[in-house]
Length: 173
Image 1 (tube, rainbow, N blue to C red):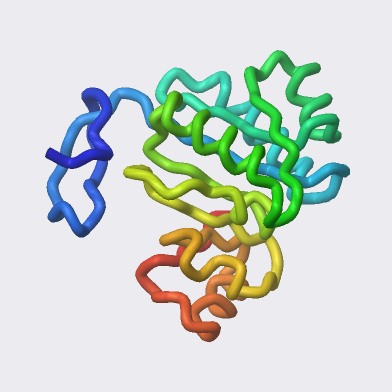
Image 2: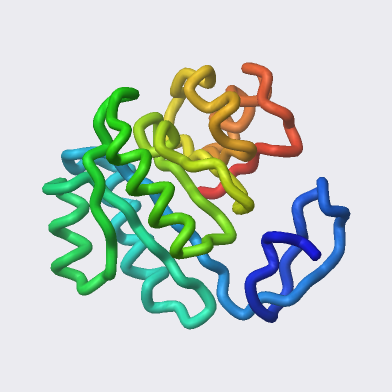
């Protein structure tokens, strides 16, 4: 049985388990946003989390930087979220906390937003995804996530030219 199967409903299993359809009623996605201040990606992140929190077929767990702009906006909107420090590579406490949250939440997908979010994506039976809204250094993504989402077709092309497998990067924007 595919370890990504959590409940009843349809989704494709990862290729290493063979392509077959299984059923899932709710997609569970953990989002990691480590930015402290507001910007374009952070504003979109908050709007997306508020919208997804209202959907009956999706369960989201946003994890944001403690005391960040996004934390204030999510709280004001009534969206359930968690916080972590999102410090540098030495921040083992945040890494431990996020890994613990992921194990408890049992997501289908963990999505890291930009470099800082991707740095804290824990390994697990879930799909590990990085979201790119700009031309970030791909070395920060290789070995950390399996899939990339680019905001534009040009960002997708940048990723492929940089060595990312074409079948593991998509444009969602």
